[in-house]
Image (cartoon, rainbow, N blue to C red):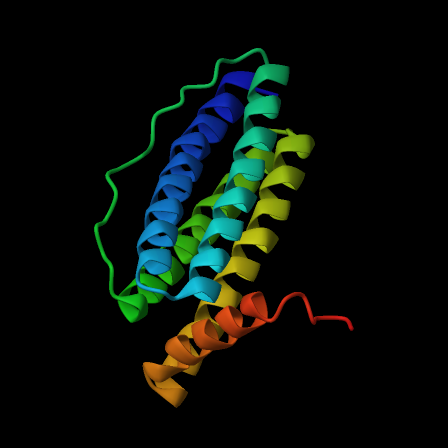
Length: 167
């Protein structure tokens, strides 16, 4: 196994995961500010998932005796329209799926089974994120922009209800 090849693949993913974390938190803040609380929380939870991915990747790099370069792969896209945010999030997730599939194949060819398995796990996670974003976008298209407002209204009613959930 060529450890340096695996470290290089993993380092590329660090930048992509950092980019996703920054982007999703930016969208979380703006969606929350617009009152789209459930969608904002979805992006917050997804950013936390990406942080866990970053931690897993960093641990693998360190195990292979490499160093973790904590530099995002690109700038934040300052998009604030919910539909456009969902479309962009789907693009980011699909790009991650493609990159992680390619990296899994390269690790397999490099006889690094542990990194290959990690990349395969990441593919599944990113496909799950894509699926959730796609369903939200489909709902916005099906029910119109009021879909997000109604979700937020219902969430606000649940919070103002004094904890009646589960009663």
